[in-house]
Image (cartoon, rainbow, N blue to C red; front, side, top):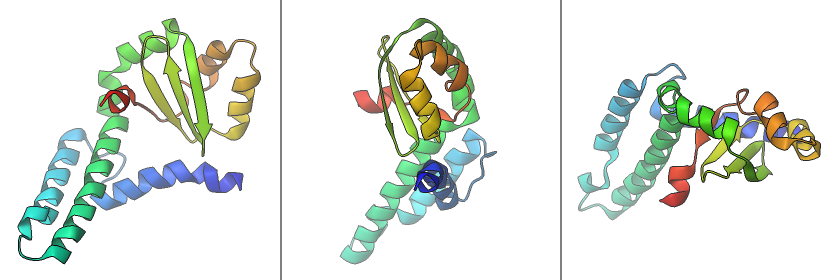
Length: 157
């Protein structure tokens, strides 16, 4: 059962990349162009007289929007642009809370920021729980070792 969860988050990322027909090396500028072109092709307003096609287009456009925003949040350019703030948070802020589900670790920091870490093995989570200094353990074994994204904007929206 653990192997199913181990692949769940990477499968989500892979599915989003397949939906947008991009790779992990796709740059943000290209990702934005792909996104805009897909949205032009499946925008619900293109089907004003066909309710079935309009509903299908709405469902597809929602998936495309979700995939685009997710991939932007984990893109190397996004990570690089926020690296200084992220470093500040993980080195100076305390961990207020964390949750683990399906290989995804969500961490809330005392400065109000929140991050998700993907494909964190259950064994690492157990070690985090049992660590005498959880923040130090997380800095050494989690924060720089797993794909992550800020969810602070998502939570406040």
